[in-house]
Length: 374
Image (cartoon, rainbow, N blue to C red):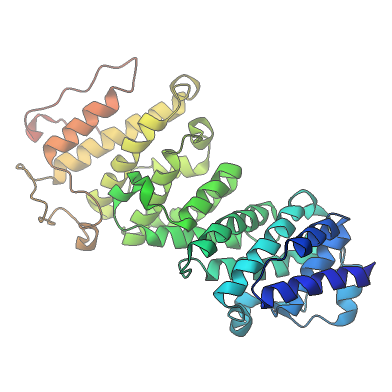
């Protein structure tokens, strides 16, 4: 049986090297990996070895009972730069088409074989991440996105990977953010962002945990462009039609996001929080206001803090777009919208309209009319 499996995998490698998807070979490959968990593991390890995506696998290891063996000697392509670049774009296109059903086949059985395959799956994830932003053809883009989703969702199920694929994808997407306004431009979505949103939809709690770990240091440090990019990424999430606001406000990430920033962060972080709330409140399910009194208190507390912070810093006249004197860090000025006093007051009035039990906050004519609520 192992010989037959090796033959099928050999046919797959032949297709990849010749840059052609043979449908008969694909069908035979899918049938082979559906036989058992051992068949899946054997196919994964053999294919990885023959493509040079991992090294230091002996022939006896490949042909042994792989469902329980821990592959300590395997070197993933993320640590082997030659292996990571061993396939050209045309070969990678074929690889993703054969690899997708194999990765998907592990989703229901990962708990049975995780120790035997987690290092190899890391190598496969590295291949997908390597090609993010590098593809020059629509064909590559069309096969990369589902493969990236499948491997990242599998990564979120892992108990040993520390979700390295998900975190790497978050970093890639966050790095693509250039302006806050881009969050509403759905047509500008990248393959990586689309893939990440699919992963968040499938595994929101894992994503929120990862973001909490990434953003906790941000709350203690002076804001940087990377800080803004993470907020923009969350903005992409909360405007999705499947976004579950009730689940979101029960996470440690929410508690972190609505904490008043320390004074050394200045008004820049306050503006980020207000920008985020401007997206979150309209998107939040109506049930959140009746099911989560703590969320209401969180938002109100943040708004009152923002009023005090903005009243203390904003100039008494409209702020020209080029004026960056209100920022602790001028590099944020081109990335975060600069709110004028009128815009801030208008934003507060808009936020208050979301509270059925509270009237809209009066819009003062001058900042002097604002009392310090803290």
